[in-house]
Image (tube, one colour):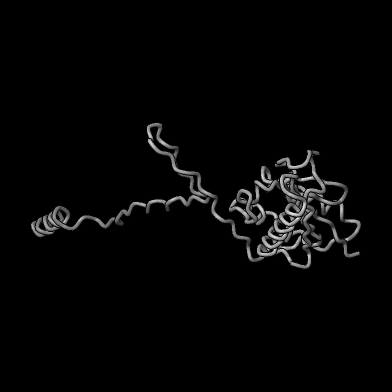
Length: 223
């Protein structure tokens, strides 16, 4: 019995003074990754007490993707559905940018000059170039079509000046579509000056609805 006492005492001392039982260390979970804003940056609203206001900025340029998948071959029996789908996509992506018409199996886009060009110049504005890039991507997807670009003016200038202006603007639109990836062989452009007004006016009258670009999209079935 005396021999057992020292042995029990050693066990008690080991229990009291020994190292604590092993426990796995606790590491808190890592913080979640920051959220990525996929939408264009929009500045916060202005303070009501701001003394000055910044001038509105032109929208950032939109770049056409390098590869756009084709909608596939177009047979004569498929023309109606093919153009229906294209019309739907144009209406969806050009809301507020262009009027979309559908005469028969053709599609016509009507864009006013003040939506495309910077003032009275022959140069596209940033918003106009962006609108044409959106159009070009859809035209590249529905690639079994021919595109006819027509330029039109009002009667504010002379007939000769108006003809020249309408031709230059039609060429500018064709060049922008080609730069965005539309094949040159699908594009034709022509200026009609003041000869085809949407709104009848007298001579030397400014009418924004007559100063426009019309883009005709015509199906080209392969069989």
